[in-house]
Length: 255
Image (cartoon, rainbow, N blue to C red):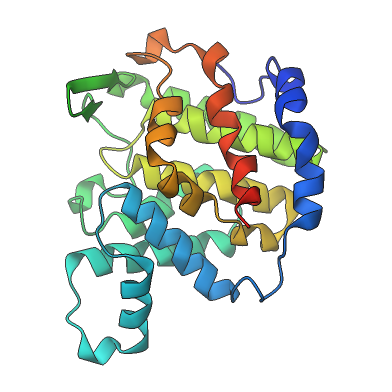
């Protein structure tokens, strides 16, 4: 599967893609929705929550208001690091080097130094309540898969594509990245970051404000269900990807 794949685009347009220009036009990008820095922190909180962080947005923002009165715990630091990674992304182009820098920034609390900003060198799987649910590609193939991913990303970034296509490809990038699972830990955070990073590269800085991470958190069961397209990297069935592709545009319907 290549992220430049247009095989599913016509069906995507028919199911939800035709709504995307209208949803974007209706979406309120003004400060009525919240200040830019607040919305970035919100994105970091919800993305962290998906991975099990228990600090909710209200608690985190109250910490931000009175840092001197709170003890800086691991979960707060985890969110702070992810905010820093989002801020780095906003000021740098999307490429492989900068993504690795983002991972190095946000993984400080949960990975040892040698694993931060580096692709994994061990076999990795995804486990649920019933055991192993997905086995990622072998570590010796990770660099090759990521090289292909970023070659395709560069092609998409340099191409003129519609708003509908931007959202379509952004979701495919998210999906493929999650399936490669290139890091020892932090893959979900990185996948959600790179999805939004791509959108902003194509449509502008304001799109950092869209509540995709919040939508994924609110609909976490569906998020995990639709991202699961096979038991391992070699048995992924992207013909079943529409449930996942519809989630990102639906995040614009939240308000």
